[in-house]
Amino acid sequence: MTHHYTNEDYIDYLHGELAPTDDARLHEHLLVCETCRAAYEAEARLGDWLRRAARDDERDLPPMLKARVWETIRDVRPSLGERLRAAFRPALTLPLGVAMAALVFVVYPSVHQPGAAPAVAASYYLDEHAAEGQENPLADHPVAAMVVTASDTSSDAPGP
Amino acid sequence: MPPARRVLGASVLATLALAVGAAAAPGDSPEALVLAALDAPHRVSYEGQEQVTRWGATAADSTIVRVEHKAPDRFRRTYLAPESIYGEYVVSRGSLSDKVEPKNARVVLTNNPALANAAALADNTTLVRKNYTPVLGSEETVAGRKAATVALVNRFTGERLMRLWIDEETHIILSKESYHRDGSLESRVRFDQIRYTSDIPDSLFTLDVPAGYHSVQGRTYGDPSGEIGKAISAAGFTPIGPKYLPDGFSIIGADTSSVKTIKSLHLLYSDGLRNLSLFENDRAAAADFGALQPMSASFDGHTAQYVKQGPTTLLSWHQRDLGFTLVGDLDLKELIEIAKSIVP
Picture 1: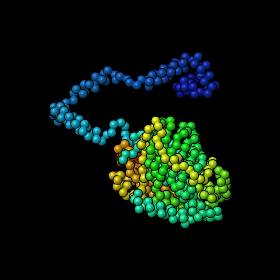
Picture 2 (picture 1 turned 135 degrees about the vertical axis):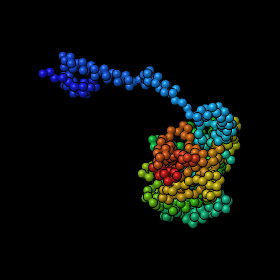
Picture 3 (picture 1 turned 60 degrees about the vertical axis):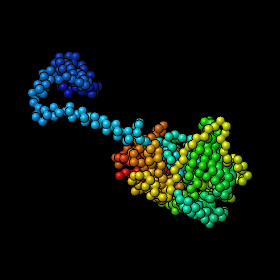
Picture 4 (picture 1 turned 90 degrees about the vertical axis):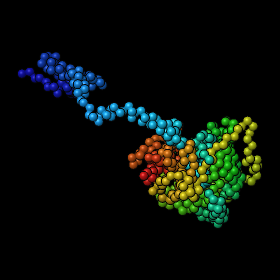
């Protein structure tokens, strides 16, 4: 009686997960057994199809399904409230938009500084901390620390 | 700081120095030696050359500087190394310093009130005496001078955080080493040579802007005063202070300054040897690290950024409308513990 392999065996074979001797035995068997070769090729095609499908980011809906979706949307009748809101939407939207634009124009510059989120240079904090240590002859800050960075006359210098 | 407090602070230090410091002599207590060393620069003039080395996590930087000092408060420091600052010199009188940069043909004027803050010095002296036990070591020679060695040991942790080499005759500190909590070296200031003399020309300490140079107004540093409440009122927002501080630390000053229209409150803490600064603002402004390369640290759901510069660590984060920056001569773990006690 001829021994046939199972789908699990083909899957392991396709993924190179069989032990070397089992791998060689199955390979040899596929050369002589048409039944197993057909089953193996079917399994291999299925794997290829699944991989191609996974690679496709976008797939079109079947045409019939799209048609049914549009038909359903057209058949839905809006309620009275929805029709009224739709009728008044331009009358409300335009003044509201103008008001919002005016608000942004007036308020935004006063709360938002040009550029990114507010930040203070780390060197300012380090220098300020080092300067305080100078009062103490025993503090850990050697005098050189501040002197070397004291040339920083950037805009981070504190205001009056 | 009110003048009255300044005078009081100066008189406290002078009294301490007169009581135990100026009279210190070989065989005196280590505490008397330390107090005498704190007062010595106000009495003793000298010229010499010193080397300053600071060890960071992966590298060390070293500066060699020639120093002329005329008591009580005039210094001229000329930088000999590294090459990037070779030839620069700083003339300082009290809180004012003029830094001459030949490479940029300019003079930078800075004002650091902390340098002339006698009351703050007295406060620090009190904290050192309260938090550190001075331990006398063996006699050694530094720059050809006999020096008494005194280790300052933290009373709470038992860790030696500083060692001083004090000239037995003049009480000038000839060398000073500070250490991390694990005992590794953090920084060293050491005279390679020193000569005591009062015969230093006054002209060394006056500055005429050299021909072709221009003057630049540099930083005017803050002056955290003991009037904490006044500084907090000036900040205009309710700050949040740390519920935890390492043993021995207490608040010694507060100051408010404006940077790029951002009002920043500076709270200053100290244990006498190590300082800790907490900067707060109500604009959620964190630190801009620029060319520095910050690392991230997380605690209690916050993501902070930190950077280490030699022995100093800066940790910055924001919470809703408040921006916080901690700067201290403490390791990151300790700063994070403090930060966790600040976040609302």
